[in-house]
Image (cartoon, rainbow, N blue to C red; front, top):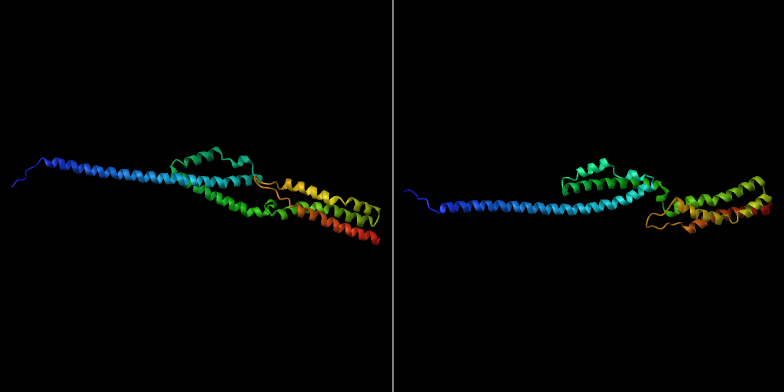
Length: 221
């Protein structure tokens, strides 16, 4: 028995082709939506990473300037900018990868600066740092008075040195106050701690001790 062709076969074939094309179109649409969502997430992550790296680099730049690094050395050169731009052509994912590499470099820079920080007096506590200024000034005049006492003995020169040395603690404290501001200036947004009580005691105690010793020597003489 011979099967006869009916007019429904072209319709069935067209319907099959339509379904195949619809499924392919749906797959393309889903893939495009997934790619767009991933790209949007990459863009957002890159923005957050950029803000974090920028926040890390700003204080590092200020600290390097304090250490004496020239400003021109902290600015990218044209070849460096060209190389950085070349690494960004891969889209948000490439930008995010480059920013993560930059964050790693910033971590290494922080570690290096932290390792060298304690060697710098400006990184010390305010009391220890300021003693480097107040201490030598406080000892200068008492040492001169002792030299005069040992060289001239208990005579008129010693009395003059003792009288001249009476206001010297105040002079040493004032000079130390100014010198602390010169040697250890405050950073932006911070207030300089000159430790005035510590400075006053540092300048006063040696002067009083030496003056008392000289007075006893004069009375004994």
